[in-house]
Length: 216
Image (tube, rainbow, N blue to C red; front, side, top):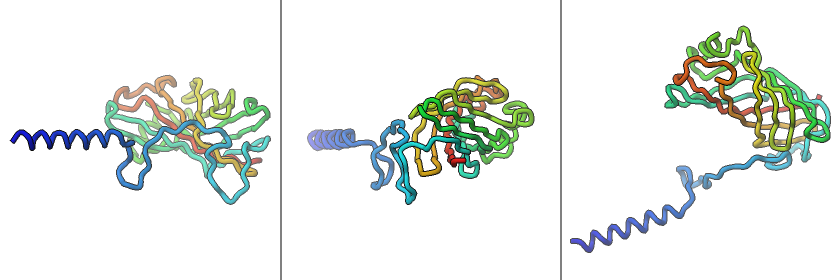
């Protein structure tokens, strides 16, 4: 009786070892192994399109196409137990592409009252004076101070309070007269004086900006 049991244990150990040597993949045989993606330069990771592409945007002023741009976010509430996903609408903004690139300038205006998670009660609370107080602070703004190939550093203003912030560029697509950028950052609402419902409401938001800019 002992010998068959030992054989079974050895078989299970070999099977587990084989699984440990394989890369982690999501469910489904058609998925690729999960990999961490690095930050991209302007001329890396471009999508293939029928439009002619260049390696960097042309010099000059661009306006942000609000209809094609957005801000999405994710956070957690109920003491970190429940995920929350939502969006803001971008009202507008400008980008001045200069040479050298570090002298470029960016200004983004976000409509604070557009905060939306699909839960009317929660959205109303966040727009109220307890949190964003959107009647008195209708705009969230980001103004750059330094532009680099993989990041943009500047000042983020929420509820009238400005704090340093950095956007990390994870994707860029450049065409003849426009470009699209995806960038990410993490925001701690406590740093901007938005302190209501500590623990119950998420403290940090992971933001993703999708911005399409058209040459003026």
